Length: 323
Image (cartoon, rainbow, N blue to C red; front, side):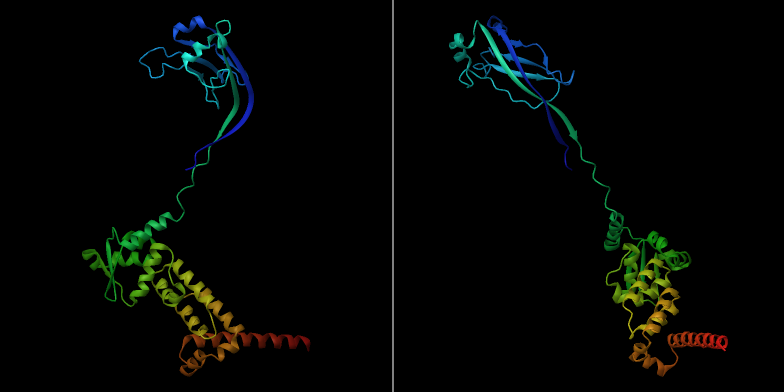
């Protein structure tokens, strides 16, 4: 996560001068008076601290130390300079006492830049991605961890989770409640369904999506209706409507009527009405015309017949009105 960043606005350039009598050096440490810019009361007060480091055991006994004690953080630059603007050892300062300690007074000059500091914190990262729950459930489907039911289809076994089947399909709910074999063995047999199509059904139950949907849409619509998985039925209807053609229109209409998909049936009938010439010349239509038994053909003929009768009735009514 990104850290906060600082917006700096310079408020004042403060110059401070501290004078101390050299006779006080024997104390080993000196403190200046507290001083402040006065720009932000009680928030920018500090103090100078001079250490002579007189203890022989100290590694820094050859140097003087100057500290700036602060009550709040500031951006500062601290330099202890000689006349030649170089840091010097104590013995050199004592050798130049007459030059540096005028009238035995040590003068320390300090320049402080005071800033009004504001910290901007970034917002917390958003919640976990919206699809995280779906991803976690998909993992259960892929690895089968925690499965408590085995579904047998065409000799294949599919591990599943009862709670998901109950939540996604009312038909599964009834099957699991009434199947005596399941109560004894935690296994259930699903007849009259192809294994690869059932696998796609399970994929949708766990992930809310189906790979290669367009390729399996017809068979999946049958299974979705059989197990009352409405969301899967809907996306199959959409897929079939998008790939509707003169060659598959009658077959799709038959499927829609058989599986009580009224919206898809109405869409196909409108398609056939608009593209009647192409449909009548299709190989599918010619084959079904020979059989004369396919309900899709009769549905289409009946719908066209009703439209013609309605048109004739309207024409007669208009003619009688004109007369």
